[in-house]
Image (tube, rainbow, N blue to C red):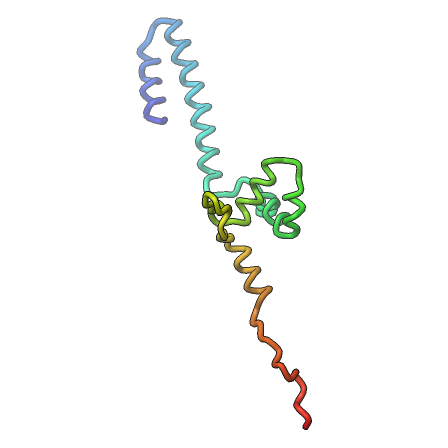
Length: 131
């Protein structure tokens, strides 16, 4: 941008025509506005557009109560539920229907916490036997 504006300034200095000078000045003004816009854009590069809580609000609301989003009237909400719950598209086989789907990572983690180590109670109970 700097190189282009320098070249345009050199042409502006060498020009005698008032209409060409006006056109060059307008072009220089546009280039300066674009340069300011790009400088601001570069300064914001790598920074989030919004706070973390605002960006992931829908996902957190969904994890808190998945059925609430599914019960929504909006088609987009139901689609979001499918994307948040399942890792891939739902597998479907003709004449058999839907197959077991792979869940997304948050649900796998929650499943591991929920299930934990499940051990069956022995048939005689937990208390020591008395004969």
